[in-house]
Image (cartoon, rainbow, N blue to C red; front, side):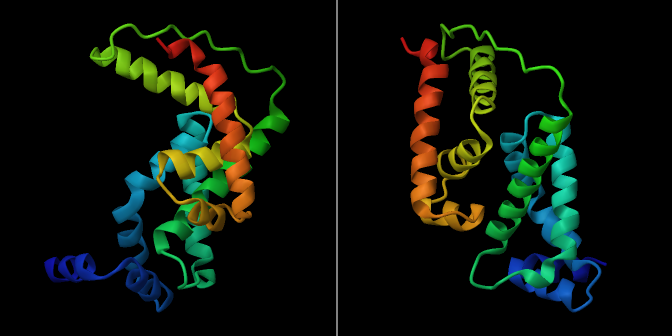
Length: 187
């Protein structure tokens, strides 16, 4: 149905969510398709590995589908989905922490000599990703929201359900710890 696709593309996120609530079976899948890459990237940055990210994203999408009636129009739909994904990732991290019996190894990351080298860029990305997982989950979520996703402190506080001061302190502590962990990358 080409006509339905064109109509979906012109509907806003909020209109798609309201259409889902009104019984439109295509509205929620269309909304998720629109933001899936972004939501998966949030899950990857918040989770400890790609498998956990995929599982947490699936949990989050099921939760969003079931709790769509809880959406308040005072926030953007993407912010609402972002919060659900981050919470699902943090829940999975907590569950995994209870099951783990071996400590996570310390990562020995080599310093990068040539920043124009594509492999070096990948190494840097891996180093930063690993360093993020050294942080406590609250600091990691704050750093991801503010520094990686570009949310303001106020937006991050609303998404994560904490006070703005908490976001500021978590970011400050997280940045300090990241500077220590990634200090070897300075020239």
